[in-house]
Length: 220
Ligand SMILES: *Cc1c(COP(=O)(O)O)cnc(C)c1O
Image (tube, protein in one colour):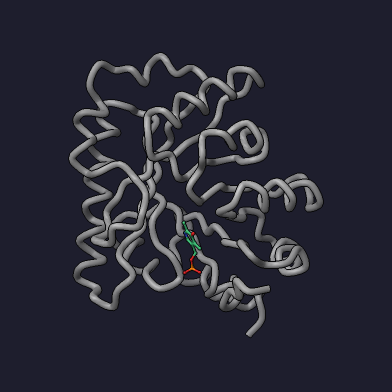
């Protein structure tokens, strides 16, 4: 099956309120254009350099999502190119985004990333940091960021009960945040192997790469 068939199939399966982000990292621009020509306009990249390069040459109405870990010194480069930054995993990073967005006189849409997996390698706030995060209402002074939701990655495992529990914990964090920060609406969770469970648990955005574009080859 080709890229277009893969997208059609996924779109057919998921409810209409769930946004499909086509994760195009490592994939050539031809693959992105093929998806774009069939009507897919939201793409996810995990490296600033790659997002910026693709943004430069691909159609202007593509919505680019920065889904990977973002270093503070790269915020400046990506801020005007990314429509949504998924991986905000520290207050320092959020403040840096606010500062750079302020200079450009824009408002940057962000998701707070939470560490929900049992693996230690994944980034994000810890679940119990949410209460600390909500202290002092410091986020009310960030005029150039719009915290629109949360993001998380489940453990890479075949244990679907564990995956479900992790997604459920992210939904609970979102509900807690939303009661203090009303702009928090989105839950970015679910990838090729677990988006069905994620949607069951309340996901509003799924980030799907290999199930659309095929396996990635990092040695190219
Ligand atoms: C690569 C990546 C995805 C997509 O993974 P697939 O398993 O290929 O669907 C989703 N989210 C993030 C943060 C990624 O880095």
